[in-house]
Image 1 (cartoon, rainbow, N blue to C red):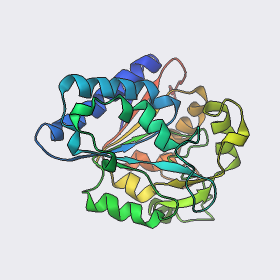
Image 2 (cartoon, rainbow, N blue to C red):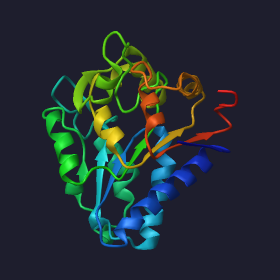
Image 3 (cartoon, one colour):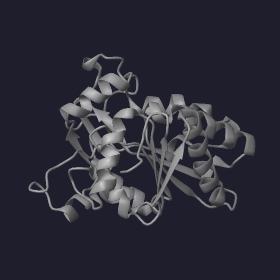
Image 4 (cartoon, rainbow, N blue to C red):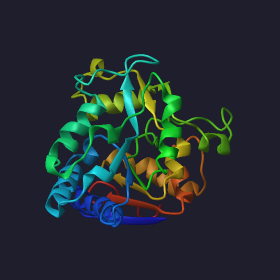
Length: 261
């Protein structure tokens, strides 16, 4: 586990983009496929712009890049929101990253994967068949969730059973709906779908590298709780990352203070 403090959002975005770029190019430059797990949200916007610029400048062969998003909103328990929905993660990724790639680099639409609420059970086998995730990019919810793996009490699920959760569809918690209303929906709760297909804890924790970025003041409390807890607990899903063999946390010192945690 590595914790790294950077000055601000711009610094976090630059460091994060460099980590993703260097990891990807270590395989792409040798003609090997790279499986990159992606996250969404305001945290990643500048990072994605910088990452696309790095790939474009390096003339990388992106035909070998496969992306695997953490989640997609659903209008009910089995129907993904349309790509035209303002909060669609398919739309977000195409606007913030895929659409910024130089078309000449060969990134292929069929290599951009999202969990399908109609068939969530198919996602984990597809990741495994592709060779597993080389690197998973993550944010952290204000309640400690990663992807949409929401907190659960330890009397609801055993610690090890939570780590084995697969990709699935689930209703979003009140706290997550409120967070996304504030952060991504401009204060309009009606825009936030009440369900999502989410990558499970199992494929996330199986990634060879995990990178967590944090830049909101509200993320201080769950991060401090996770560090002080010192062990994984379903009540703080991101706490499972602390025992990952190659986990890195980068946070912004202007918003988050982890001193004494």
